[in-house]
Image 1 (cartoon, rainbow, N blue to C red):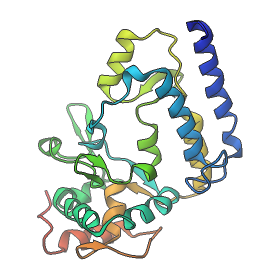
Image 2 (image 1 turned 90 degrees about the vertical axis):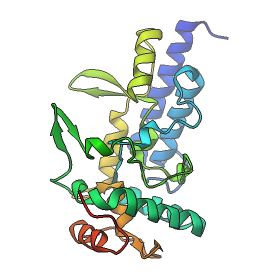
Image 3 (image 1 turned 180 degrees about the vertical axis):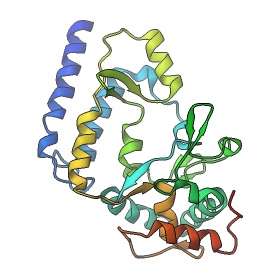
Length: 254
């Protein structure tokens, strides 16, 4: 087995090799090969998890599915995600619909573009502070992600990547995992860098992509107690919110 410095060098080279595949990526979740952004991300994640098992999310942890941790999803991702949602058993779909109405119905208007978030002691919050403990992703069912294999980019990348912001490298993961790594891991611990993956997704999305927080996409596809058969890639989210919050059974908005 290689010694530790050699092992770290091999890991960094593996990450670099995967990053070199990104200019040739052509789709998001379609082909599951080196032309697929999700596939390349999965290879980087597997390397990260194999080399650094100590900071993996513990089984059953759903911290990143709760509170303000709501993924922003583009239409190119939703196109791949929605068939998985609609393909769930009817009982599971109806549970997701109920959760969307009960949890997100009253605050859905707060997720609209240009209106999302509010300042609280210098921090931008997406959901009201008093609701953070109970709000969670509507796709979280029975303590697990109901569409894990088709989860969006933001969910795939969280927990195993580092990110460069204005030249400074930071860990793209929850505060507990970040603290553990910073306190116990060597300073030169190698993680895949998220930035080129983000740039690849942006390039695939093209000009003026339709982008919204996940609960808005879900609300746009709900019909009564279940989901619509039709996948819509350009919803009028303002109209969606008005219709959703006016539906009987949806709690009053905050």
